[in-house]
Structures are given as structure tokens and as C-alpha cells.
Image (tube, rainbow, N blue to C red; front, side):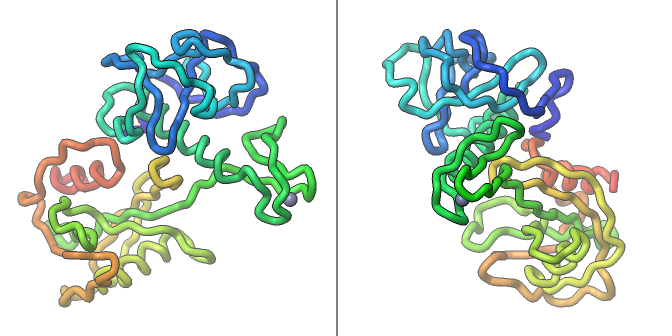
Length: 274
Ligand SMILES: [Zn+2]
């Protein structure tokens, strides 16, 4: 999965440390990120971009490397070997840098969308105590947005319940997933999503593991569950689901994408590990 960067170690603890020219800098322009045109070690330092480190906002640390961000107007030079690439490049990188790029994007998206206080409209400032934005007028404090969402592998014997999203008939089959709503436990979300999306009742809901998923400012909470009762016709929620099917283990295609918890759970079922 994309957050599994061992032997590297991600350290998200807050610090007021000032950036130095040899630190790494992630500059995002919407969903593009400024990177070096190399195979590895693609996240540039301030020095490599030829820009000062003053005023950069701290993101996190990986091993002994510190990562910061600056707004896109901090780099306006036309410099060889440096270019903007879509952050989705993270999905194919085989180094810790994929996780670094999307995690930085989530934090920067939080900074960008909390520039003003939602309560009083005053401008917000970076907290000097924690990773937060603070309104000096009314005291409102905002923390990075992390929306919990469940993903569930529903089994019935040797078959796995899989769906395709509405309007995407050429996409591959995936698992049922959905955001946790106000007032729900994760287990209740699993049961509600299965009923809402395909009209299926489930039992034996068991926690599997979780995964930070910065692409949608969320954390995915993985579960397994079993069909409760006899198989019925699916009752499809047409706004969300294009197709649903019970797919036998042996018919599940091998996934070449191992970055998500969903692909890991599908692979587990295919190979009889769950
Ligand atoms: Zn305020």
C-alpha cells in the first residue's frame, strides 16, 4: 500500500523548525506538483530549485529529510530538468516519494481551504503550537480534514461482491466503499452502504486494517463481511453503482495496482487469505 514506505519512516510531529536550503520543497499548482525529471529522488530541494527557503510552511519529515511547501509563485524560473507533473504520478512511483507527494497535497489543500475562518470570515493563521489553522479574531481552530470512509469485502462462500461505479462501465470491478455519516459507527456504515448501494444485508462485520488515503482527504477503514441470508436480486443505487456481481475467487483478475487497501483485500480473497 502507498503508505508502506519501510525502511523509511514518516514522522508527522509538529515543529517550528525553519527551512534550510538543503530541505525538500513540494510546490503544488492545483493538482500538479513541481518535480525533477529523474527516475528517483524526484522531489527537489530549495537549493535545486534556486529559491530561498524563507517563509516556507513545514509539512512533515521522512527519515532525516524535512519537507516544506511554498505557493506556486515562489518558483517562476524556466529551469531545465524541473517541471510540473500531475500528483497522480504518485500511483506509479515505486519509492516513498509517492506517499510524500500525496500526503503533502492533503496538507497543502488544508492550508488552501482554511485561509478564512468559517465562523467569522477573518483570515486564519498557521498555529505555532500544532498542525492547525487558527482565527485570531474569534479563536476558531481548524485541523487537517480527514474524512473516514469504509471499504468492505463481502463474501458468500467462494464469491466476492464487487461493483463498477455508475457511468464508468470500462472501469475494473472494485469493493463497496463509502463515507462515514454523522452519528454512525464504522460497522453501521458498512451495513448501510451494502444495503444502499446493492440492497445486500451483511453479517459478521470484521475490522481488517486502515489506510490513509490522501487523494480524497480520507482514511479508509477496511472490513470483511458475509452475506446475511439467501442471495437475492441486487437492488442497485443507480446514482452510484453501474453494475454489481458475485465473482468467484478464480475469476478475479490479478491486480497490478498494489497501492490501495481495496486491491490488497481483493488479492487476499483471490488467494484464499480471507
Ligand atoms: Zn473567526
